[in-house]
Image (cartoon, rainbow, N blue to C red; front, side, top):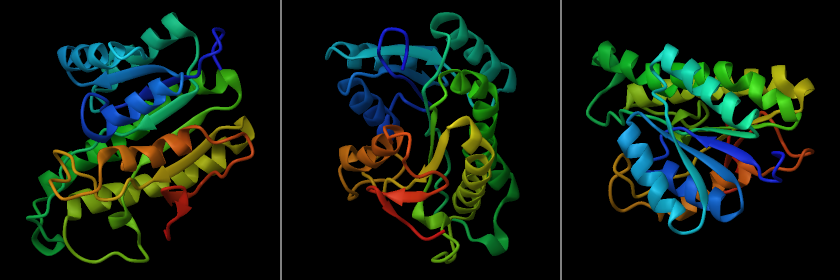
Length: 235
């Protein structure tokens, strides 16, 4: 918790879709929310709209593919808040339903990995010192059941491989950060009706609720797990 009694939570890609709804739900539960986006204008607009409902939401410019920018964002959070309690790695791109692994454009795959895997990795490394301050940090990696090796089929190779990598990173970080009392979990929000997911999915509030559940786990909660709606998924 922060010195003001509020949990300080950062959500990447928080200006729309699942990220925005996660910000809304965290704000409604009393968190101080750092809503990040690749555009300062987008972050300020979304944060302003959520703050109008009474939540404590602050905009933060953060492009997860810009290493220097990620470091600057961490410095800004350190200077203003001195700590971070929850990190939600939500930013993601390229649900490439038009591709197959056998003939995929590897430039598209690399671009997806730079955001979906390496972007989350950069953010964790930059913000880890702030997560260690309070001694009970939470890292939530927003993943997808398409990345489950148990059930994996063909298609969407850029998205699927990058999210499978994110799942692997989740397991490694959970093991390495256990001694720091930082819980690290992956969460699949399910097929959600967003710009990326398209129409016909479940309400965004339902998908976001599972992410918020993982962000609010007690100190004796699970770590190194893969969940949807608070229930384990096969790796």
